[in-house]
Image (cartoon, rainbow, N blue to C red; front, top):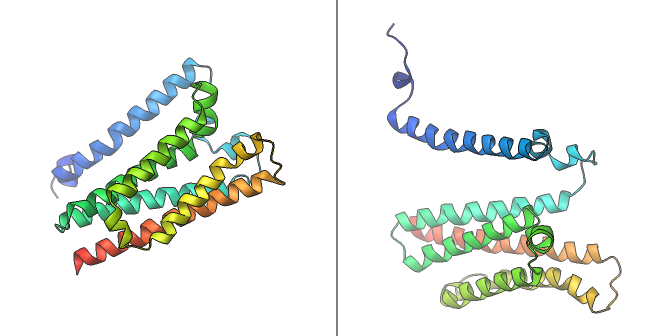
Length: 217
């Protein structure tokens, strides 16, 4: 039996892949550990699930967590579909539509997951959350106008419903601020938000499937 070495166990491409995965991974963990210790924060406070850290019940935030999963799934589907469509030499507009929609999905995922417009922007960066809503709105309108013909050839009703539902969720707090009473505001706000995310995921999943199917036939 010959000598076993790293080079005999892994091909060159495999070693490159491992380096691209684990070097950034270790750097990230090391950076988090350094920042945590510098600020007197236990590493497990950052590494563990919030429900465990705060001794909460396992059902706490379940609807929010499901929303995060739908954001993540939509983003992954859009980017993988864009790669397939590009490799199959489909029209560039289809590729860019999928890519820009995926980028917007990731931004909203990050916002939702890290409470950007709810906490980070208003409390720490002193940026009004309406500025964030305006950015998302303008980005969505820009995509809609730029790829209008493509969207009109899809099940765009789901996309319109996504915009409406997410918009209603975002404006619930503003409606209350105007003195309009809403009984059980979190039921209203979070239900609109979840249904909006679900509509967003459903629309882009169906659209990506349509593009990929056309590309591989």
